Image (cartoon, rainbow, N blue to C red; front, side):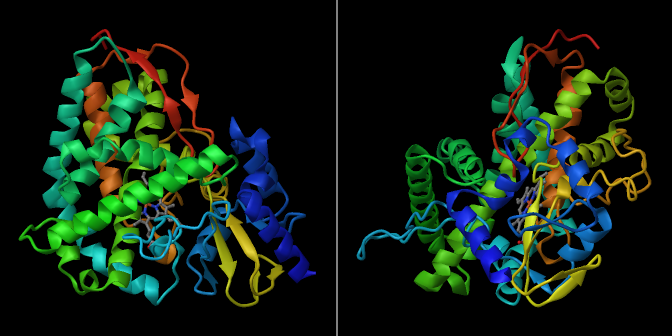
Length: 418
Ligand code: HEM
């Protein structure tokens, strides 16, 4: 029966993300009650289609840190063949399917070590003034206007410029990034239409071509940016190595901004609605960091992740066969009352405010967590310091994806008063 269950899961994967199927369309507007119902069924429960689910914090964290679990390419793109005809200049690389995110050790370890030097605490300290400069410039642009879209014109702009600064990519080349990011994350739940399939194919082609060319140009230069150094590494010498670099850089690019955008959006929304919290932030700017943690706990941009049992394993009393798939509902774990008492209360002063799973845990723990924290805190602090009277000018709308949660638009206006 396990085999049968697995083929059902596989079958569903071909028509869309199985997790999306399990969670259902109802869960899209407000997924949180659904995660509560799942936790109420037990630490680990089995859905009829054979997927296992956990919305428990202790179990979720343990599974993510357990080497008996691994990752498998969880995203299916409707059978799109990334490789063009033989003889084509580029072999296409989909960064969500062919990067460290979907690799297990030891291959994962090798590639992760290659890029981790740019994310150490000391590297980040050195980079922080650039993040602040980017935030100030973005604020200069929007604060001159009485009304603007907080997502498109601020929350998206800042992280795109931050990752571009890390890669030393000029502004003219950044114009396509927002579209690439929304196409690649917008289809994480699965590709449903021919139009989506074409959009993904075009995006993956453009990105592969752009990054392959960028690596080729930087390979011969003397640049000290991340791309130049990676291009001059041993991987830059072979076409297989270049493909790995394209996937790695592509993932950094998309993961680097499509997530942080949502923290800035959700954070701004909460701060606009909660006067007390906004006043506290203005009086005590250091509160920005724990406020960002609480935003990520309560509105994690990545709502869940999937793991596969690499061998038979018992989790919270449930026996999982080798190959069984388990969904760690990050957003559910973050509201587990046994880890976070009175879980829906927004409390940046919680003792364990950083103990949420929004950045995952274990070997895939988000490489960009430090950079995301610095960027989101600087953006939210700067936004309200510059525009204390910022308020909504219309309804916010949410993205139509279950895996990634965040606002697609937040119309705002500002009067300049506190
Ligand atoms: C991995 C969330 C920002 C780069 C992850 C994972 C999560 C996550 C949940 C692991 C998924 C899993 O375990 O299956 C977030 C959130 C962010 C954020 C919520 C913003 C608030 C960033 C930034 C960068 C980045 C700014 C890069 C500049 C990566 C990379 C991985 C990763 C490279 C793969 C790590 C690995 O597989 O070893 N992120 N991320 N992320 N993230 Fe982030």
